[in-house]
Image (cartoon, rainbow, N blue to C red):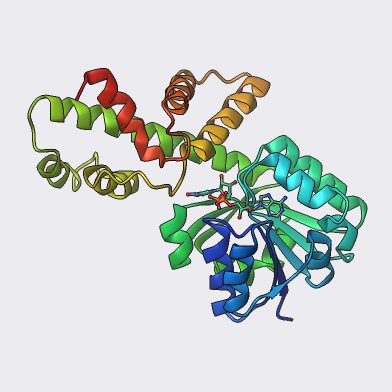
Length: 292
Ligand code: NAD
């Protein structure tokens, strides 16, 4: 049976992801608080709904791609939310980056009415959301994961079941440590080179084929060279993620000295008015310190 898919949260990531599902042949019912985003996806063939409840009534797989835990809780649990409309046996796939605690709690609430839930956050940012090549890390039951693989492959290339409920979002928190600390390390290196009088573009060409090369280097250095800090992945969203990393680490007793330093850098960038800029802006923290 081909799935009838619902999609809630048509922002930077959700919009291209939903368009890819339409292109893959799924019939889509969508909802967002932002009417312009709804119109753009409706123009491509989706059916707009008046609430998350209505989306759930029309779908057997309901995807959420929302900013943070509180938005997902609201959309799933509150009045006119998904659980008011979801049929027994339907599957909620939350693809937002939220906390493992909230993710597990939502899966428990859903299970009470026979609704399955997967946490399936993504990595790759807007470019891979547009290309349909996201890395998708999934938490939940294996049989549920397998039942929605065609939907997940409509948006991603590497789709991996990591463990039970909450394991997908936990893997995403770990992913966010690697991505953001990579940007910080890269920023330290670029500012050192620039201050020493090196042409940073030449240095990038010189090092990208060696061990310092990475997807992060290739995504962020060209943006920094162009002084393009339009998000992509905003400081706000990454600060939320690193905050969730620290809370989770605290709960399970894991010290994270570099991640706590990163959170301080994000606070400084927030005060400097850069909260909505891309997290490539970490370089501007180092430039300010070094007076580049
Ligand atoms: P975004 O802010 O661009 O989009 C969020 C969308 O949710 C908006 O269209 C907003 O109107 C909608 N929304 C908010 N509350 C709602 C509600 N109650 N009901 C219906 N719609 C609601 O965010 P984004 O960049 O697309 O990120 C979405 C998620 O993906 C976040 O959890 C983020 O951490 C994660 N993520 C983002 C990136 C990135 O590069 N932007 C990469 C990987 C993962």
